[in-house]
Image: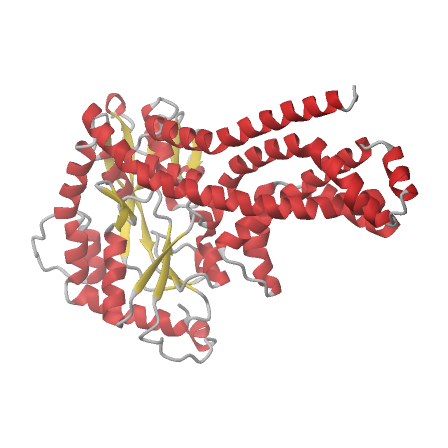
Length: 497
């Protein structure tokens, strides 16, 4: 931090000791930083997790973890969703402009990981002419991009990168040493080769104006480095290195047993074989059931909004004055013409700039409801158009007002016509609800990512999650078919062809 930057800091007060220390990380595929315990996926662990617990203890504040995707960590910090981000974030110039960083708490280099039959790819020069994977927005990515004749593939999740390496889609990986150790060190088919490449530093990110908490955490980190606590934490995870000794000045040889590293190895190896997998899948069932319940609630509430707003839009576009018709049509075209994912991100991250802050749950429900309302409106408009004009004339002849005729005669008939389509739309919405996982809602898709990345098992876990979606949607499929049959019988009795 430059002196000029320090002088520009606003005055701040000490952080409140009784207030929870809210911190965020992407714990879905983040070994060994913050991740779900393979023996108990409801429990978090990792060397950064242990570090934050010690920081919170020394600050006298309870800690509260907030899950967020990697791409949303800094935007969520700026939005005020949490107080700090701890996720192996490199202290690059771009990151330093976006957030206020603590002193470095870990320094490391990048390592090359290859299949055992390609141990000749042990230097950056040897990687030329090959396809190399890495994690996006990292030092490794920048190093590879500078190399000529290297085809670089960047990933958001390291599990996908290791999967592609095993499947032969990549020739090598260049990753931070902790990631390389924990992903390649528990298998027999991959190996770390060559010397460390480059050097990067991790820091804790804060909002630019949160100098009180930044300074307090900085002091705690310094004390942890001086009294040996940092070496104890990293030693348990087999991550204490000569580079860390030089950075912290802690050259005491404490001989800390790597108990967490050995426990992780044992946990991963115990999950192999059919019996291990069966026990694992049985243990998944309560987690999947909880995620399925959230998926169903979000989808049902969103469909209520879609039906209500869609009907208003359809009536406005069909019967309203010119201005109402134009505005309804404009809304429908804008919503249908832009991706649902962009709408979700805008509502969750964009609206706070206008002073509107919604929780992830309500933001997800609102985004899905507003999106599907546009499609429901077109369905209802088609249904309204399908009602014979004579129905309106007959209602008017019976001394009904125009509004009464629409409400009591036209809308019920149109609704009966579009009911099967509405049911199909709800099934589609149920599947599209997977997109709300980007705003930290742990529904079925987010659960799949977490479980599959924890155990590197995409087939069995994918089948379980697919079965959960199928079980959720199957009753509505059967209901849609029942409605279609009843509607067909009703139309035949009434003489329609």
